[in-house]
Amino acid sequence: MCLIPRSVIEEVGLALPVFIKWDDAEYGLRARKHGYPTVSMPGVAAWHVPWQDKNDAHDWQAYYHVRNRVITALLHSPYDHGGALVSESAETQVQHLLSMQYSTAALRVLALEDVLSGPDHLHRDLLSKMASCAPSARSTPTPSPSPTSRTSRRSGGASRRRGAATRRLRRTSSGW
Image (cartoon, rainbow, N blue to C red; front, side):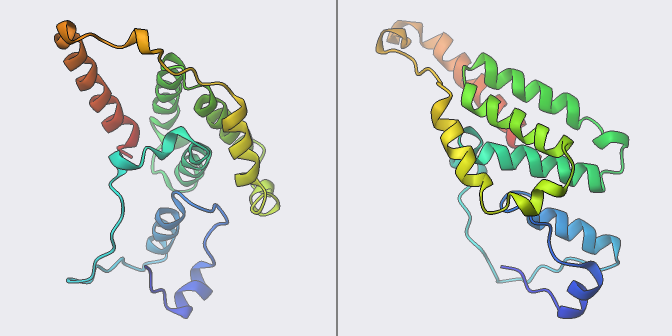
């Protein structure tokens, strides 16, 4: 929950029409540029599902993760061209492709295409983009492992190593 005085909204403007993911971060960064601090209230809490439990970068929300992160970086990063954003995004894209998460990879490409098309699509597509991303995620096949490809109990070492790699991947891909 967020309480913003009307005078701040009049000076800073409304939040960008970016729907979910990074909308609050972008607004906070913009407000800070205008000299407004963020205040935390002791004893007040909001419950959110932990990032590692959401796994929402593998469905239609992948589009919003990428698009809104890039928009926020382009608008507010102190580094030229968003710093390491491009190389980190490319690395994550390769990880999705190598993991055969083709629908996620396709949504990430769509997000970058929309960013490159300029800001006009933000208002125009606000009500329709989510609906167009969900069918895209369903229509792009993402193979699932067959029952015969599971690791047997005897190869527990490989399974543990794979688990550590997955945890590392999860930490790096959601550690914005």
